Image (cartoon, one colour):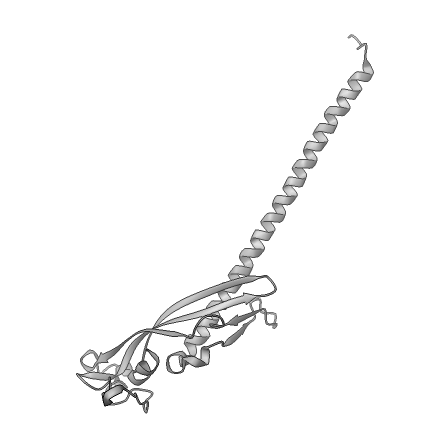
Length: 196
């Protein structure tokens, strides 16, 4: 076993190698910390988006359950639905229905022919006769011609609607808009009054 002639030089190289490995480990630790922070932010953003999407869908369901959007769509212009997304009793998300866009829009309407109805079907019974289930609605048309009642038309119409809910959560900065199409049978007079 031979001793080195320069033991101090070996100690310097050992310290340098240890310092390089220490810097490498510090860099790897810092990188892992930054990646973990980015992953946490991504998960938080996805959770906020999922909650906003759920809140928008809840607001659309509230609109659908009321069915007033087909007879008085103006009630839902700028309507606000508050949502508690985590069940703690506090309002977490405020859902603005068409706050910056539009009313529920009727896209299409078609008067149902009496030949398409069945008296045996309870849903069809209100469509026979001169007025539908809502009754009493008048249609004002040019020239005195009524769009309902002629050519075997029933008092009901099938309508297609576009409903929109927007969520703007100030706490997280999440903004999302959901459009939902829905088909609905309504009184023919309401269809012609609100589906222009």
